[in-house]
Length: 291
Ligand code: HH2
Image 1 (tube, helix red, strand yellow):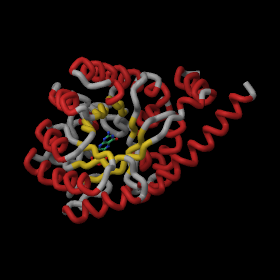
Image 2: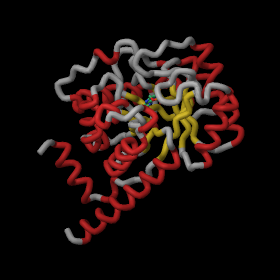
Image 3: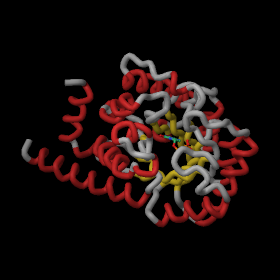
């Protein structure tokens, strides 16, 4: 039995780990994102999708202006800014929903925070320097630290780990300590294993299986399995046909105790997480009562 199994057993007996779960809806204002590229590339399309996800009950909308899929082309800051800032400004004027900006560029993060974003979603976990943590600290914003290696051009050749879960957890903890030293509150730091980012399908599955080990680090955990290639590798499903696989990963992650799940299909995944949590809570209570 791995330490992940032991932790999982302990968590199942302790209903307190099943804290409220937030659904983060993905809003890619890009022409080339891996599953929805070009679908919300204009301001009107992006706002339509954002409003739809808010109506479906998204707790957070994650606005991104640069694809990070393997092989994607880098985008300059001016282009990224022009994609995300008008969307954030408009949604902020219309709604109290929590807004995050998916960027690794400090100038984009700064403009997004000024436009009303509440969270910086950094898929490089501060590999580019301290600037994103400094901005989060100065604005009292949340900071997502997602594990990745290399760039979209190189990440698929960077999947060598002895123990992928231990390495990812250690590296994220180091980044979190850095952010705390810069002044970001521990409760504002979210850890994310970076499903599919410099991870094989087997490694992504292992990170999901042992999510309770990341939850046990004490920071809120965010996970983004939605439509990703590990589902295609398992089921042979095209990127447009991965709803069932995504739902399985969402149910599992909810029960594992994550604080938030990043998804493209908000309504379906919110329901999936709600039912999974209700089942887990009930069985945890029953286990408790008979312990
Ligand atoms: N995955 C993607 C992008 N940003 N951020 C976090 N915190 N966690 C993730 O798992 C994550 C992320 C990739 O998905 P998507 O945004 O749909 O695609 P693309 O990068 O091609 O725009």
